[in-house]
Image (cartoon, rainbow, N blue to C red; front, side):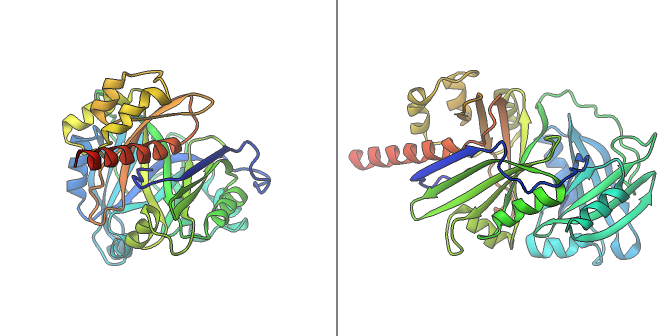
Length: 380
């Protein structure tokens, strides 16, 4: 989380058996694709292909009935699939979503072997059933609620149906990119929820979807702060970092997101990379803007840890953060938000066995900012 404010304390725990409230029979599900609702599909396709290195698997195509017409495109890179949808009719759910939030993540699609059985099981466990199963193009899809205005689309593809087939769209072409950028998969989704809703949301994912809570931390930022709990699907393909402000009237970046976004939603999507230096340098050269890190952060880094990979100079030149836990290290960086409300951005993360989410970087960044501020006062 790129909170450049001042943490006084940061505590984290890894939970191996953090909750007993798991579903008796976790459903076999896996992340299939992420759907964004957008106001300018053409512009976003251009940006994600030119700057982020995504392949255009399905070009912009109109689909849906007259009252719910839309235009969608499917992009891919390694195991990542992004479905972009722009509404063309007032009856499409994207119309209301965009009016409330502007562009953002609207659906986390889950691949299941039997969408009808999954829908029945999830709604029986307490999920909001938003659209019952329907068949089209060799697929069966259904929709259940997730958090805020975000939903989970359940998708089942029949025998012989291509893996990237989206109902209403033509078959996807094979990815033709050269892998230069090197993004591999979705590492996690950072989700902001209003104060007081964190534990209920965690309980919902554990009891209804069969997720497990695997990580927990509290970060106090002066008089402000945030609580975070991480839940993960049984196959580890869906990881949600759920975050709430410490108090209902707290300021800070999480409260700002909730106010500007208009409620709970996805703050950022983290893409994994096998080589963060290569990915970030390539993306930066293509025009992706990244957040800058105070130089004092890198001045203090040698006393904090020794990178298992990449040099100190490479990290400083690219503004790459590095953190470690008992299992290993991670390298991470956040893009500068290009959202009209500043409420969404991407992250690039490389893990060398590490399982945490960079909480120590927040403290280190604060100390770096304080060092720079003190040096400026002395110089002045």
